[in-house]
Length: 207
Image (cartoon, rainbow, N blue to C red):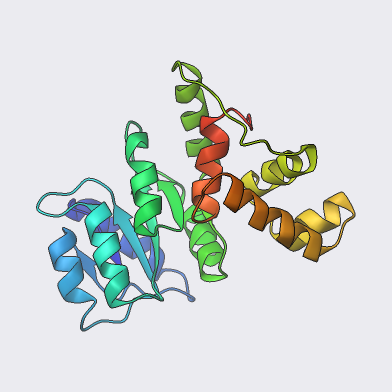
């Protein structure tokens, strides 16, 4: 499902997504209210959600939509300059972030990633957020992370799964699972997307 207040954008994205055999756009909405009505009658596995929309924005729409369909995965469609909304989108339950002008191949990758239970963060967007934060003055805090935890956090920010991290670092997946759980607890992060934002804000990763 595509949720965006620009019809031309929705139409273009719908055509591109429907060109893939493994995707079908089941509905589209121009704001949060339309989206909430739609998902009560139409099943959606994925919602591509604009952040800024009239009447009801993507933050409220995501939060309320997940109460109706907790199994739905939401990917935020972002433009440069909307970074201040990211934490609120993560708190609402977003599983991924894409730039609106992302290549359709990246949109496809993001959908596949979140459907498998992973989090997706556009590398271009990640780079932009890091550069923007570098120009701000703020106190960095590392949450007393160990060297190994920082190493694993960096791998998480690269988009690697726990098994892939384990293979790269020559440790067991169970060990990575434990470190990831510790990272979420120490940084007070709800999920991987929130963990990535913590790493960016506190200069724990660079691209």
